[in-house]
Image (cartoon, one colour):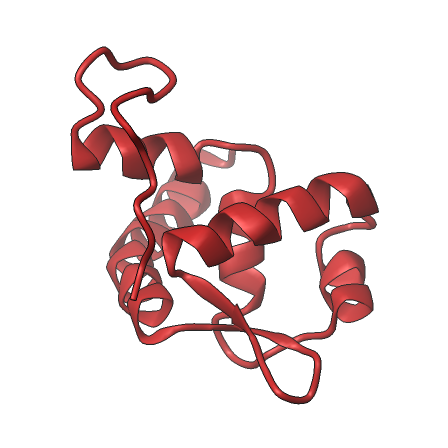
Length: 110
């Protein structure tokens, strides 16, 4: 079960509403990338760092801790990080955005 993410203090929000807390977590550098790289299979810290273009180990661990506290990522028995059921649900919700981005990119040449 996800732990309490916010006690009312959320960057960019005075209310601390759940949507603002979620956007705060997902807006932090490397958070979405970590979730994206874990979408297919669990990865060790080293494999995850490689998949994330050699992100700083300190920042990567900070984000993993935040994502674990939020209930999206868990550390498996084999030592690898993987998505929780809640994390998988979140990634499923991001997939339509991914498909849109692919179409947009191919049409705009961005």
